[in-house]
Amino acid sequence: MQYEAIRVRRLSPVIGARVEGIDLARPLGNQQFQEIHDALMAHLVLFFPDQRLTTDQHVAFSRRFGKPMIHPAAKQEIEGHPEIRVVRADENSKIVAGDAWHSDMSCEANPPMGSALYVTEVPPDSGGDTLFANMYAAFEALSPPVRDMLRGLTAIHSGAHVYSNAFYDKDGEKRIPQAEHPVVRVHPVTGRECLFVNAGFTTRIVGLTKLESDSLLAMLLRHCEAPAFQCRLQWGEGGLALWDNRCAQHHAIFDYWPHRRYGHRVTIGGDAPFGPRRLSPARSRGAR
Ligand code: SIN
Image 1 (cartoon, rainbow, N blue to C red):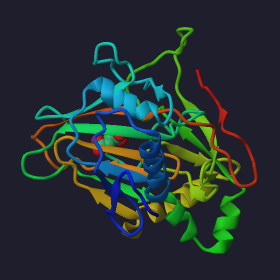
Image 2: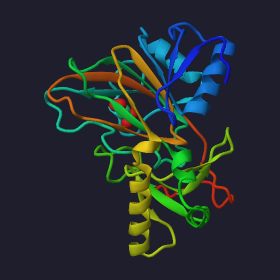
Image 3: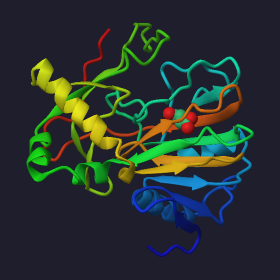
Image 4: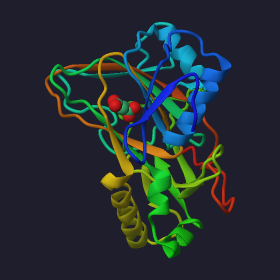
């Protein structure tokens, strides 16, 4: 692909690119936006190093790609910005958010199309990288009979075991987000098929016995973790990563305790996933 407004360099043959020659603090022109969008569709995760952004600028950049979502379980920590999810680890942290393969908030009926994480503090001596994996490549690497079987299946994605805080919908009802999505998702922009199950949220495949569901899920999740589908992002202070949650998974590596790492994530709203056979647009089970 030819770019005129940005410079794009691959992070690996299969996923990820570093984007230079652009200052995200300034409003994006139409050509800049179009080229970043094209690069995101081609590489699934883009890394913009050495940015200096205010929270308003970070949110304005994210808004070009869709409406920010308010994370149901996140503490609202940044005054006037409920859409910011703080990503923080320090000497008191025993765990960090995102330390398992997942696609952000896939337990929602309309899971986010993407996320934009801006990291302003990194561990002093390496660590705190994030792995990303290409779910088009994962799907295409399966054998034709398995691909065909998966095209007819849906799976439950649940937040019950993930979110420790109770959270409430606008009527004040306690809500545990849970949704049913096709196992093979058709990307709404590229039209390509990708695997849409992840270790963080997917709990069972609908219509199978427990043994069948557990075994098939275990196989798929192990398959998705193959290094050949991945890149590893080393952040650096002021790095912003924009990723497509519809066709990529990620895994934050917590290997830097007791050091600090700090960033802000904007999660960008998306559509109900649909499968190749138009099985079911995501049905929210909305367990209460
Ligand atoms: C996440 O959004 O899952 C966190 C990613 C990271 O901290 O690198």
